Length: 115
Image 1 (tube, rainbow, N blue to C red):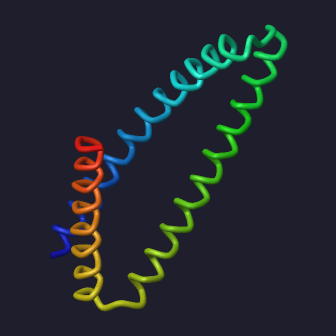
Image 2 (image 1 turned 120 degrees about the horizontal axis):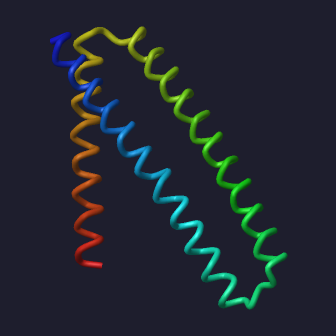
């Protein structure tokens, strides 16, 4: 049981780290593309574009900081739950969360495919 839980946690951690790196790379590209689009569509001057870009970067940093704070809060809550529940209850909780996550992902894919 402990090995299974450990493997589940390890797999989730590795997937999260990989996804986070891809997200960071993609967010920079998206921001650059959005900036070019805004400059063209709104006919921004170079100064305006620079100021908007700076604002967007600052906002992105704030959002990342908030995401890290939320992650720390989730980790703390998870640790507190683990200390409250029995090992069997905690395993049941993890299994139910995994099932819910699978259903959520499936639903998102269906919505993306079918509109």
